[in-house]
Figure 1 (cartoon, helix red, strand yellow):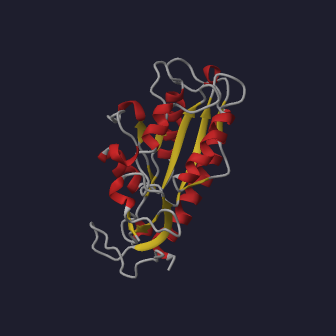
Figure 2: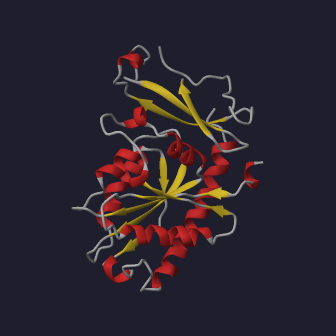
Length: 63
Length: 189
């Protein structure tokens, strides 16, 4: 399975507005908790980074 | 709108050693940054961050530091050069966050007792900054022979540094504004 960006928008916990997806990072999991989420094609999992257009706050989630 | 919010650009003092001359450099940069219109700043002294040393990375994230970096639009890292490198504590602190840094500008200030003004520690910090998702600016500040730049009380002896800091801050502020708009408005998808 190849990880793809989620289409549902993250919501800023402070402003309650949709956040903007502006970056991804390939994370090589070392802890067993994340080992099951590894994409075999990438050797790790994708972490998405989002920013709030209102307050500028950042947030991330697994793709 | 986010564009109406003042820029927040904290200064990280990257050493906890006794007698650190970098404190004077960090205070001076913070003071000059505080004079810039539309900019708020804060001096983050890593010696005062209660981070444990029996673990590392995001597992030891400290709430106040994380909140300040999350709020930041850009950062200044003031680092002395110890045996050509940065302090272990600075790396320990920087590694405690990740999402808070992504696509934010960073300016680096090198400090040394010798003539090279921390150029080697700046070179060593560049790959670390990049891996944290920070975007380095073009202009550095190099405090060479720092013991001659400041008095023991921290007062500035060499006024030429004010012009160098001014150039550095102009670029940093420009670089703080540009990715801020991109983070908030321009989507990857």
